[in-house]
Image (cartoon, rainbow, N blue to C red):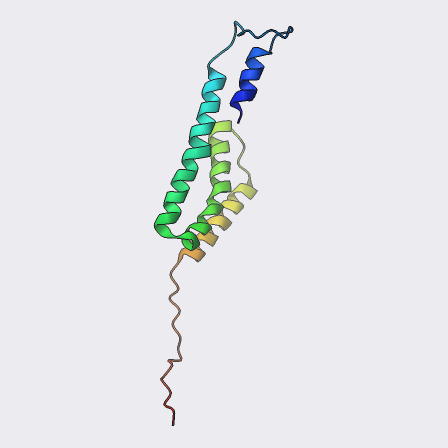
Length: 119
């Protein structure tokens, strides 16, 4: 979707409206667009759908809450963002919620049902 816009920028980036490749054009923006197309846009959905198919939709839905946690952690690591107390509180709450929802239901009914006999 962004490739036509990038190509239009390359060809019309000079003051005149001539279709010519600029001398200072770099391959790095095109590689960045290719990376965005392959990894976050396509490959992540392939892996997510494979995981949903393996464990089911109900069990996989709780792991969507890890998305903001991974985004926050990656922004701290890659962008040198400051970690604050609200980041830690949110991380603990999300992990606690996932652990609570992931646990097996071990509650057993104390009243056992007995089959009734009709007379």
